[in-house]
Length: 211
Picture 1 (tube, helix red, strand yellow):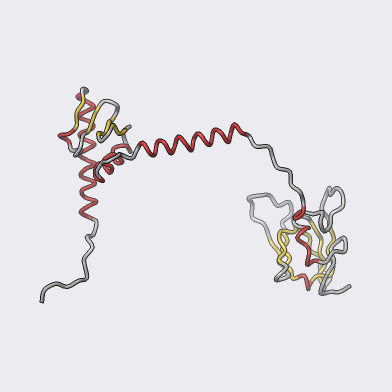
Picture 2 (tube, rainbow, N blue to C red; picture 1 turned 120 degrees about the horizontal axis):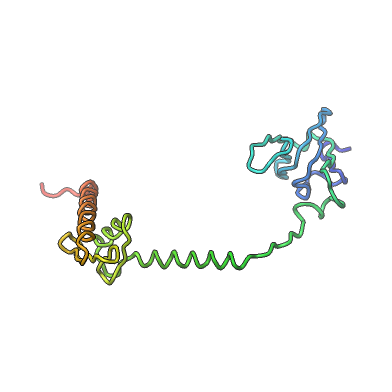
């Protein structure tokens, strides 16, 4: 046997082992050591065979890998349990005609509706023709209270309206407690926004002026 090109169980050279991915094999080295494992990968460029040697390896669990140069092997025997039918070049893992599973149209339709609904909600949260500060206030308020746009007005709790320029004096509503609550939250959020703006460094031009 040519030791530089060890054979597979059916006589195929190891340089075409892509068909055998997933098989459980027992390999014999030139030193007559035997190693049993599942073929995880084969790189024809480097002629390296990778075996999973962990017994009863389970998906998602750590496994032991052995990397073997094919020039160091002299025999490979297929020991896959419960194998049915012939396995060889053109009949193995890489050349299988895999059946396409059934597509559950109900699940696909539900996911599509969820995506569309999410996009609609995202679009509704963006004010049309409002100032940047107005959008920032809307985003801040909507983190703690239900808000929506009505033109350029912010409707909070479906009972309080905040008009441009979105200060405490622009809060209107028929429910005194709701108006008071919204004003308190609004004033707090405006203070946070002002503090954030003051903390943002102002770009300094490198151009020197004057003498």
